Length: 353
Image 1 (tube, rainbow, N blue to C red):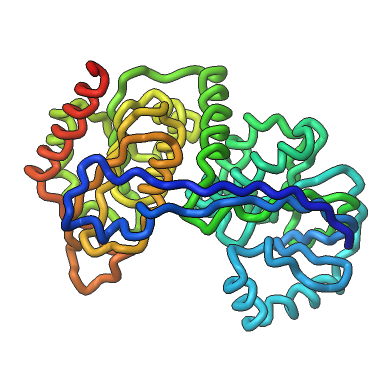
Image 2 (tube, rainbow, N blue to C red):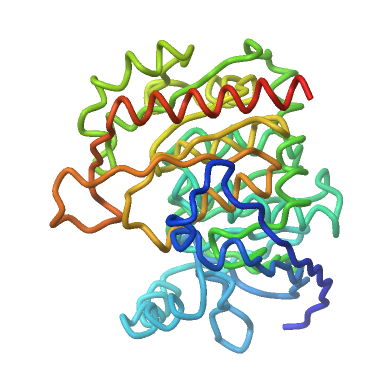
Protein backbone atom coordinates (compact mmCIF):
# COMPACT_ATOMS: atom_id res chain seq x y z
CA UNK A 1 0.00 0.00 0.00
CA UNK A 2 1.26 3.45 -0.84
CA UNK A 3 -0.39 6.68 0.17
CA UNK A 4 -0.27 10.45 -0.15
CA UNK A 5 -1.78 12.85 2.38
CA UNK A 6 -3.42 16.25 2.40
CA UNK A 7 -4.18 17.66 5.85
CA UNK A 8 -6.69 20.33 6.89
CA UNK A 9 -6.80 21.72 10.44
CA UNK A 10 -8.94 24.36 12.16
CA UNK A 11 -9.83 25.31 15.74
CA UNK A 12 -13.15 26.89 16.68
CA UNK A 13 -14.73 28.61 19.67
CA UNK A 14 -18.47 28.20 20.20
CA UNK A 15 -21.10 30.75 21.15
CA UNK A 16 -23.26 29.89 24.21
CA UNK A 17 -27.01 29.31 23.90
CA UNK A 18 -29.05 32.46 23.42
CA UNK A 19 -31.17 31.72 26.49
CA UNK A 20 -28.43 30.32 28.73
CA UNK A 21 -28.96 30.82 32.44
CA UNK A 22 -25.90 30.57 34.74
CA UNK A 23 -27.05 27.44 36.57
CA UNK A 24 -27.23 25.53 33.27
CA UNK A 25 -23.71 26.37 32.09
CA UNK A 26 -22.36 23.00 33.24
CA UNK A 27 -24.71 21.22 30.81
CA UNK A 28 -22.69 22.60 27.91
CA UNK A 29 -19.34 22.27 29.67
CA UNK A 30 -16.29 22.11 27.47
CA UNK A 31 -18.40 22.63 24.33
CA UNK A 32 -18.34 26.37 25.03
CA UNK A 33 -14.57 26.36 25.51
CA UNK A 34 -13.97 25.22 21.94
CA UNK A 35 -13.23 22.16 19.84
CA UNK A 36 -10.46 21.14 17.47
CA UNK A 37 -11.36 19.67 14.10
CA UNK A 38 -9.44 18.53 11.07
CA UNK A 39 -9.21 16.10 8.19
CA UNK A 40 -6.44 13.95 6.79
CA UNK A 41 -7.10 12.86 3.20
CA UNK A 42 -5.18 9.73 2.19
CA UNK A 43 -4.81 8.47 -1.35
CA UNK A 44 -4.36 4.71 -1.01
CA UNK A 45 -3.06 2.34 -3.69
CA UNK A 46 -4.07 -1.28 -4.17
CA UNK A 47 -6.34 -1.76 -1.16
CA UNK A 48 -9.32 -4.08 -0.75
CA UNK A 49 -12.84 -2.98 0.14
CA UNK A 50 -15.43 -5.47 1.29
CA UNK A 51 -19.18 -5.45 0.95
CA UNK A 52 -19.56 -5.61 4.74
CA UNK A 53 -17.48 -2.50 5.19
CA UNK A 54 -13.86 -2.72 6.38
CA UNK A 55 -10.96 -1.62 4.19
CA UNK A 56 -8.03 -4.03 4.06
CA UNK A 57 -4.49 -2.98 3.18
CA UNK A 58 -2.16 -5.26 1.25
CA UNK A 59 -0.32 -6.11 4.46
CA UNK A 60 -3.54 -7.66 5.78
CA UNK A 61 -4.36 -4.92 8.29
CA UNK A 62 -7.87 -3.43 8.42
CA UNK A 63 -7.82 0.36 8.50
CA UNK A 64 -9.07 2.24 11.55
CA UNK A 65 -10.78 4.78 9.26
CA UNK A 66 -13.36 2.05 8.53
CA UNK A 67 -14.59 2.47 12.11
CA UNK A 68 -15.89 5.33 14.26
CA UNK A 69 -12.62 5.41 16.22
CA UNK A 70 -9.85 3.17 17.51
CA UNK A 71 -12.00 1.90 20.40
CA UNK A 72 -14.57 0.57 17.92
CA UNK A 73 -11.80 -1.01 15.87
CA UNK A 74 -10.36 -2.76 18.92
CA UNK A 75 -13.82 -3.97 19.96
CA UNK A 76 -14.34 -5.37 16.45
CA UNK A 77 -11.11 -7.33 16.79
CA UNK A 78 -11.99 -8.54 20.30
CA UNK A 79 -15.27 -9.83 18.90
CA UNK A 80 -13.27 -11.62 16.16
CA UNK A 81 -14.61 -9.48 13.34
CA UNK A 82 -11.29 -9.82 11.53
CA UNK A 83 -11.61 -13.63 11.65
CA UNK A 84 -15.10 -13.46 10.17
CA UNK A 85 -13.86 -11.15 7.43
CA UNK A 86 -10.93 -13.49 6.71
CA UNK A 87 -13.30 -16.47 6.45
CA UNK A 88 -15.58 -14.62 4.06
CA UNK A 89 -12.63 -13.63 1.89
CA UNK A 90 -12.03 -17.34 1.17
CA UNK A 91 -15.29 -17.40 -0.77
CA UNK A 92 -15.03 -13.97 -2.39
CA UNK A 93 -13.57 -13.42 -5.81
CA UNK A 94 -11.20 -10.44 -5.85
CA UNK A 95 -12.31 -8.08 -8.61
CA UNK A 96 -10.02 -5.25 -9.81
CA UNK A 97 -11.51 -1.76 -9.69
CA UNK A 98 -9.41 0.68 -11.68
CA UNK A 99 -11.48 3.88 -11.56
CA UNK A 100 -10.66 6.46 -8.85
CA UNK A 101 -12.88 5.75 -5.84
CA UNK A 102 -13.67 7.27 -2.46
CA UNK A 103 -14.70 5.75 0.88
CA UNK A 104 -16.42 7.81 3.62
CA UNK A 105 -18.28 5.43 5.93
CA UNK A 106 -17.74 3.71 9.27
CA UNK A 107 -19.81 1.37 11.43
CA UNK A 108 -22.12 4.21 12.60
CA UNK A 109 -22.69 5.88 9.23
CA UNK A 110 -26.06 4.19 8.60
CA UNK A 111 -27.67 6.45 11.21
CA UNK A 112 -29.30 9.61 9.82
CA UNK A 113 -27.30 12.02 11.97
CA UNK A 114 -24.01 10.20 11.41
CA UNK A 115 -24.55 10.03 7.65
CA UNK A 116 -25.07 13.78 7.31
CA UNK A 117 -22.73 15.04 10.02
CA UNK A 118 -19.88 12.50 9.93
CA UNK A 119 -19.86 10.74 6.54
CA UNK A 120 -20.89 13.46 4.06
CA UNK A 121 -18.42 16.00 5.47
CA UNK A 122 -15.69 13.50 4.63
CA UNK A 123 -16.97 13.41 1.05
CA UNK A 124 -17.07 17.21 0.91
CA UNK A 125 -13.39 17.35 1.86
CA UNK A 126 -12.44 14.54 -0.53
CA UNK A 127 -13.84 16.60 -3.39
CA UNK A 128 -11.19 19.21 -2.69
CA UNK A 129 -8.67 16.57 -3.80
CA UNK A 130 -10.40 15.11 -6.85
CA UNK A 131 -13.14 16.20 -9.31
CA UNK A 132 -16.51 14.69 -8.38
CA UNK A 133 -17.26 13.81 -12.00
CA UNK A 134 -14.34 11.34 -11.98
CA UNK A 135 -15.03 9.69 -8.61
CA UNK A 136 -16.98 6.58 -7.71
CA UNK A 137 -18.30 6.45 -4.16
CA UNK A 138 -18.21 2.93 -2.74
CA UNK A 139 -20.77 2.10 -0.06
CA UNK A 140 -21.23 -1.09 2.01
CA UNK A 141 -24.22 -3.29 1.23
CA UNK A 142 -26.33 -2.03 4.15
CA UNK A 143 -26.60 1.42 2.54
CA UNK A 144 -29.12 0.06 0.08
CA UNK A 145 -31.84 -0.11 2.73
CA UNK A 146 -32.97 3.57 2.82
CA UNK A 147 -33.67 5.85 -0.13
CA UNK A 148 -32.25 8.98 1.50
CA UNK A 149 -28.68 7.73 1.15
CA UNK A 150 -28.78 7.93 -2.64
CA UNK A 151 -31.08 10.96 -2.69
CA UNK A 152 -28.70 12.96 -0.52
CA UNK A 153 -25.79 12.15 -2.85
CA UNK A 154 -27.44 13.69 -5.93
CA UNK A 155 -26.11 17.22 -5.17
CA UNK A 156 -22.51 15.95 -5.30
CA UNK A 157 -22.75 14.94 -8.98
CA UNK A 158 -20.42 11.99 -8.61
CA UNK A 159 -19.50 9.81 -11.56
CA UNK A 160 -21.09 6.81 -9.85
CA UNK A 161 -22.40 5.61 -6.51
CA UNK A 162 -21.83 1.89 -6.17
CA UNK A 163 -23.49 -0.02 -3.34
CA UNK A 164 -21.51 -3.21 -2.89
CA UNK A 165 -23.07 -6.61 -2.48
CA UNK A 166 -22.64 -8.13 0.97
CA UNK A 167 -19.91 -10.54 -0.10
CA UNK A 168 -18.38 -8.42 -2.83
CA UNK A 169 -14.64 -7.81 -2.71
CA UNK A 170 -12.86 -5.16 -4.78
CA UNK A 171 -9.20 -4.23 -5.14
CA UNK A 172 -9.04 -0.48 -5.71
CA UNK A 173 -6.15 0.85 -7.72
CA UNK A 174 -6.67 4.30 -6.17
CA UNK A 175 -8.90 5.02 -3.16
CA UNK A 176 -9.39 8.41 -1.54
CA UNK A 177 -9.88 7.94 2.19
CA UNK A 178 -10.66 11.10 4.15
CA UNK A 179 -10.35 10.67 7.89
CA UNK A 180 -13.12 11.77 10.22
CA UNK A 181 -13.39 15.56 10.26
CA UNK A 182 -13.44 15.41 14.06
CA UNK A 183 -14.79 13.36 16.93
CA UNK A 184 -18.51 12.75 16.30
CA UNK A 185 -20.62 15.65 17.52
CA UNK A 186 -17.96 18.22 16.57
CA UNK A 187 -17.64 19.97 13.23
CA UNK A 188 -15.62 22.07 10.85
CA UNK A 189 -17.84 25.11 10.19
CA UNK A 190 -16.43 25.74 6.72
CA UNK A 191 -17.11 22.16 5.64
CA UNK A 192 -20.61 22.10 7.17
CA UNK A 193 -21.58 25.41 5.61
CA UNK A 194 -20.30 24.21 2.26
CA UNK A 195 -22.59 21.19 2.63
CA UNK A 196 -25.50 23.48 3.46
CA UNK A 197 -25.02 25.53 0.30
CA UNK A 198 -24.83 22.34 -1.73
CA UNK A 199 -28.12 21.02 -0.28
CA UNK A 200 -29.95 24.36 -0.36
CA UNK A 201 -28.99 24.83 -3.99
CA UNK A 202 -30.25 21.35 -4.79
CA UNK A 203 -33.50 22.01 -2.90
CA UNK A 204 -34.12 25.14 -4.95
CA UNK A 205 -33.52 23.29 -8.20
CA UNK A 206 -35.95 20.48 -7.39
CA UNK A 207 -38.63 22.83 -6.05
CA UNK A 208 -38.33 25.27 -3.16
CA UNK A 209 -40.55 25.27 -0.10
CA UNK A 210 -42.45 28.06 1.59
CA UNK A 211 -40.59 30.90 3.25
CA UNK A 212 -40.67 32.24 6.81
CA UNK A 213 -41.86 28.94 8.17
CA UNK A 214 -41.77 27.73 11.76
CA UNK A 215 -41.30 23.99 11.99
CA UNK A 216 -41.71 21.44 14.78
CA UNK A 217 -40.27 17.98 14.09
CA UNK A 218 -42.09 15.29 16.06
CA UNK A 219 -40.51 12.03 17.24
CA UNK A 220 -43.88 10.41 17.98
CA UNK A 221 -43.07 7.37 15.80
CA UNK A 222 -39.61 6.84 17.29
CA UNK A 223 -38.87 3.96 19.66
CA UNK A 224 -37.20 6.22 22.23
CA UNK A 225 -36.73 9.87 23.28
CA UNK A 226 -40.34 10.83 22.54
CA UNK A 227 -42.31 13.59 24.25
CA UNK A 228 -44.73 11.71 26.44
CA UNK A 229 -47.28 14.54 26.64
CA UNK A 230 -46.90 15.77 23.06
CA UNK A 231 -50.66 16.26 22.66
CA UNK A 232 -50.50 18.88 25.41
CA UNK A 233 -47.80 20.96 23.70
CA UNK A 234 -49.05 20.84 20.09
CA UNK A 235 -51.60 23.65 20.72
CA UNK A 236 -48.82 25.79 22.22
CA UNK A 237 -46.66 25.26 19.16
CA UNK A 238 -49.60 26.00 16.85
CA UNK A 239 -50.34 29.24 18.73
CA UNK A 240 -46.81 30.38 17.89
CA UNK A 241 -47.23 29.48 14.23
CA UNK A 242 -45.35 26.16 14.16
CA UNK A 243 -46.22 23.47 11.65
CA UNK A 244 -45.71 19.86 12.77
CA UNK A 245 -43.67 17.44 10.68
CA UNK A 246 -43.38 13.73 11.43
CA UNK A 247 -40.13 12.96 9.61
CA UNK A 248 -40.89 9.26 9.07
CA UNK A 249 -44.00 10.25 7.10
CA UNK A 250 -42.29 12.69 4.72
CA UNK A 251 -39.96 11.98 1.78
CA UNK A 252 -36.43 13.21 2.31
CA UNK A 253 -36.72 15.82 -0.47
CA UNK A 254 -39.72 17.35 1.28
CA UNK A 255 -37.89 17.36 4.61
CA UNK A 256 -34.97 19.39 3.26
CA UNK A 257 -37.30 21.80 1.45
CA UNK A 258 -39.19 22.45 4.68
CA UNK A 259 -36.01 22.84 6.71
CA UNK A 260 -34.40 25.10 4.11
CA UNK A 261 -37.46 27.36 4.24
CA UNK A 262 -37.70 27.39 8.04
CA UNK A 263 -36.72 30.40 10.12
CA UNK A 264 -37.40 28.57 13.41
CA UNK A 265 -37.02 24.86 14.17
CA UNK A 266 -38.03 23.02 17.37
CA UNK A 267 -37.56 19.35 18.26
CA UNK A 268 -36.43 17.17 21.10
CA UNK A 269 -32.98 15.59 21.00
CA UNK A 270 -32.86 13.21 18.04
CA UNK A 271 -32.01 12.77 14.37
CA UNK A 272 -34.68 15.23 13.19
CA UNK A 273 -32.56 18.12 14.49
CA UNK A 274 -29.93 17.16 11.92
CA UNK A 275 -32.04 18.98 9.34
CA UNK A 276 -31.06 22.30 10.92
CA UNK A 277 -28.02 22.09 8.65
CA UNK A 278 -30.32 23.09 5.76
CA UNK A 279 -31.43 26.33 7.47
CA UNK A 280 -30.16 29.77 6.49
CA UNK A 281 -27.55 31.49 8.64
CA UNK A 282 -29.18 33.50 11.44
CA UNK A 283 -32.18 31.20 11.78
CA UNK A 284 -33.14 29.87 15.22
CA UNK A 285 -33.35 26.34 16.60
CA UNK A 286 -34.62 25.05 19.95
CA UNK A 287 -33.60 21.67 21.34
CA UNK A 288 -35.82 20.08 23.98
CA UNK A 289 -33.37 18.08 26.04
CA UNK A 290 -33.26 15.98 29.18
CA UNK A 291 -32.52 18.01 32.29
CA UNK A 292 -29.58 15.83 33.39
CA UNK A 293 -27.91 15.34 29.99
CA UNK A 294 -24.43 16.80 30.47
CA UNK A 295 -22.56 15.01 27.71
CA UNK A 296 -24.44 15.07 24.42
CA UNK A 297 -24.11 18.51 22.85
CA UNK A 298 -23.96 17.46 19.20
CA UNK A 299 -26.89 19.69 18.20
CA UNK A 300 -25.69 22.68 20.20
CA UNK A 301 -22.35 22.29 18.41
CA UNK A 302 -24.07 21.83 15.04
CA UNK A 303 -26.11 25.01 15.48
CA UNK A 304 -22.87 26.89 16.16
CA UNK A 305 -21.22 25.47 13.07
CA UNK A 306 -24.17 26.48 10.90
CA UNK A 307 -24.32 30.02 12.30
CA UNK A 308 -27.72 29.45 13.93
CA UNK A 309 -29.15 30.87 17.13
CA UNK A 310 -29.40 27.97 19.58
CA UNK A 311 -32.02 27.80 22.33
CA UNK A 312 -32.76 24.95 24.70
CA UNK A 313 -35.60 23.78 26.91
CA UNK A 314 -34.94 21.35 29.75
CA UNK A 315 -37.50 18.66 30.53
CA UNK A 316 -37.55 15.77 33.02
CA UNK A 317 -37.78 12.09 32.17
CA UNK A 318 -41.18 10.43 32.34
CA UNK A 319 -39.51 7.56 34.16
CA UNK A 320 -36.54 8.72 36.29
CA UNK A 321 -35.13 5.19 36.29
CA UNK A 322 -34.58 5.23 32.50
CA UNK A 323 -31.15 5.96 31.08
CA UNK A 324 -30.85 9.66 30.18
CA UNK A 325 -30.08 9.12 26.49
CA UNK A 326 -33.10 6.87 25.86
CA UNK A 327 -35.83 8.33 28.09
CA UNK A 328 -39.12 9.88 27.01
CA UNK A 329 -39.62 13.44 28.26
CA UNK A 330 -42.46 15.40 29.83
CA UNK A 331 -42.61 19.03 28.69
CA UNK A 332 -44.37 21.72 30.71
CA UNK A 333 -46.63 23.61 28.24
CA UNK A 334 -46.32 26.96 30.03
CA UNK A 335 -42.52 26.71 30.10
CA UNK A 336 -42.50 25.90 26.38
CA UNK A 337 -44.85 28.82 25.70
CA UNK A 338 -42.47 31.23 27.41
CA UNK A 339 -39.39 29.80 25.68
CA UNK A 340 -40.99 30.02 22.23
CA UNK A 341 -42.09 33.56 22.94
CA UNK A 342 -38.54 34.54 23.87
CA UNK A 343 -37.04 32.90 20.78
CA UNK A 344 -39.49 34.58 18.41
CA UNK A 345 -39.18 37.97 20.13
CA UNK A 346 -35.38 37.76 19.96
CA UNK A 347 -35.60 37.05 16.22
CA UNK A 348 -37.83 40.05 15.66
CA UNK A 349 -35.45 42.25 17.62
CA UNK A 350 -32.44 41.08 15.62
CA UNK A 351 -34.26 41.73 12.35
CA UNK A 352 -35.17 45.26 13.38
CA UNK A 353 -31.69 46.11 14.65
